[in-house]
Length: 325
Ligand code: MTE
Image 1 (cartoon, rainbow, N blue to C red):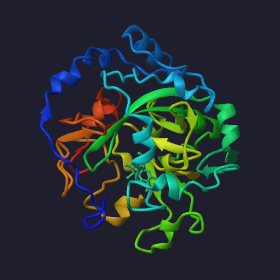
Image 2: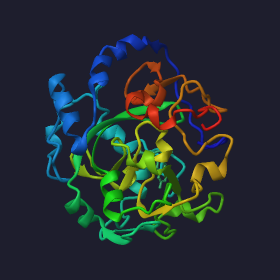
Image 3: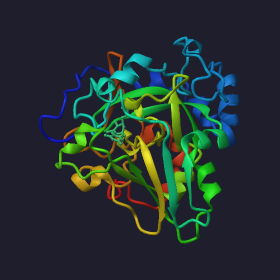
């Protein structure tokens, strides 16, 4: 994502008519992801979209359940598991996108604890296995749009972050959540570089974190997350650029002040705190107008809020989204 040797060119191709991708827009209009994703499932069923079991715990839905026919609510087919697990951004291991699987193969992801604290009444350190028991994972097929101009459609397993937020009872003074990833240069060779401000950290406003779309993911394609995809637990915020979805979380802290974020610290003009997908605001090096879905030959128009505007637009009422990019 940096402005030098790390960049990889995204081949450009002709733009597919947006209408081709919006033919299922009617579906989105009716989409309302309710508690535990029940409404989401119902909407999928009514639209004829086949979903694997929603209540599967990671590993219990065989990958064979994913026949390739699954689509998101816009009708976009899920990206192959092969692409999702071999084309990665994970700077703790490498600035290259391929080979992260091999480099991260031996990362110890169990046992794994997540410390949840700060401005909450019930601070607590959870084991990831305990989180999965408390909040059984459900299926969410989400688009993921990287600021570099590529995207994927990913069948995640995870639970709504709002459930964990409720469990620790935030104080009224809590306005933001700060997420911190593992810092362990012995296991993560990329952290030997002091070019980057380790550990990787991210942040959300509390109301964004409570939004029904915001997920803590523990699996994808019916298997527990692989190290390269953020095992054992990562954030997924589908209306924001992919870099907000921090992997390998070890700490979640509630704060009054807006937290620092990894990319905003590196290049504040390029990466804002909000980082909502916005085709109207270009990154200095990448137009955000179009994107290429990995595995597909053409570029398509990028949708505001990555197509999730109905669910999240109200969070930003009255805000200048250019200034607050
Ligand atoms: N989380 C950590 N800890 N370290 C990273 O380098 N990269 C981010 C995000 N989360 C990153 C991270 C970026 S830039 C993207 S696009 C997504 O992870 C990529 O997720 P994926 O590799 O599962 O596709």
